[in-house]
Picture (tube, rainbow, N blue to C red):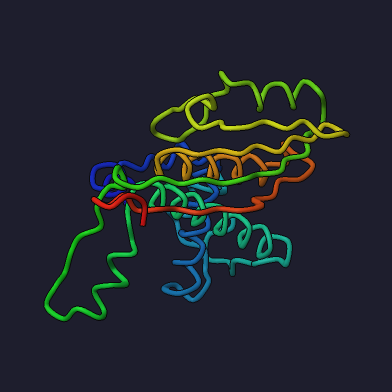
Length: 207
């Protein structure tokens, strides 16, 4: 699966900032429950328990493990979703439903622009300066600078900042996804997208 996402979609799982070993363990535990009646096998014991003493015993799923797994899966799916939305125009897939026989592939969004207003409350003044500096770099596979998309910066009390951004859809989508990921990691006190719009560039202008 890693190879498919890397080669076909240019998405590196390692850029997610998540513990990939935990994701693999979750998938292996799921296989034990679905295919082995929930009993620990030799491979699982060797890989994740560094012991064979629990081989053949029933694997448990605690409430804490279950809730943590939900968060992990959500973050992983969100990472993939943000990457895909920043790269491809999926509105074509919607149009395909109403045009039998026409099956266009999602194409890169180089002919679209986006704009958004985001409000972020930082934990310290240093954090505020770092993430609102025009030289701040964001992105997953490709890196961009805040100066590439920044239109207006408004500093508000208590380490807050409201940023108006505009640029290529890929840049705007990547910035929003990147900041959402940092917020999920607890780097900000608060992060809210106040508005977001994307426009298609046509021969007659913006659509």
